[in-house]
Length: 218
Image (cartoon, rainbow, N blue to C red):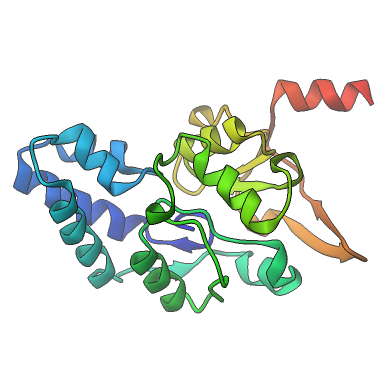
């Protein structure tokens, strides 16, 4: 969701900076640790002495209240208008409440069911979120395309056995080595339906060696 469907990078970083300053943590470390991960797990890692649920409540509300700069990313609307509602979902490290707020503010249709922080025991980079996302859609992981912008998300998708397409919204290309392909943004991705099949076309700025080898073998 964040960094793929909507741009909320400013809100995320401002929230974690405030939290870090109040808790005696290097803000740069907190922001780096938080990207693409569940907030409750980041709190556990950085301040295991605190009540993580209380910290999560504060972080969630602060992010919900901070909507400055929040916008739908380029290319998203056309893709979602093309895809049937039953063929895509959101797999996010955000809570249900935060995800709903973000998507509503971006005027993005919220899928009937999503995988959010409350629906998993282990967040990204663990494969559980994307394994549950594939199951939710009724497909094998290998038949689902994960679209990510974070290193932890790309790792989670790869570990789940899904092909991974990453964008360069928030992370440098070098940090997204677990992605199969990387594009600059979703403006470079073209989706169309061919009967019941989804055709996805893009020219990547990076293709993993394993995908290049597979293409050569064909």
